[in-house]
Image (tube, rainbow, N blue to C red; front, side):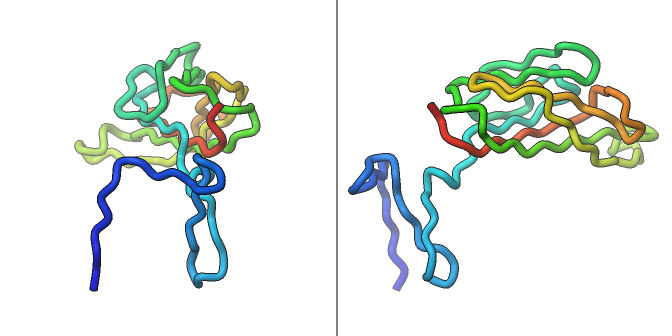
Length: 140
């Protein structure tokens, strides 16, 4: 029989912020806190934040260069970002244009922000239609 658990706060017994979750196959555990995305952003052309978590601002530094500021700092600069970008070729997607996926490249990691550059398929700096950044790591 299925059951429903309704709570507002989870706290680890040994360490308040550490909760182990049994993984697939019931033979391994994963730390819940370590597995959560700490920062994510979806932005248009590096100037508009469409949606985000733990992002306090976005600075358009130059064509294809952007700084994403965090609301809550990371514990160190050894976090793991995952980035992707998209630009429309031949018009917008809704007008029959073709979307190409592109990969923004990292410039600088700090505990309070990440600086990224976006390049097109010709390796030129470009403000892409949509950029996304997801960051895994420890918050300060």
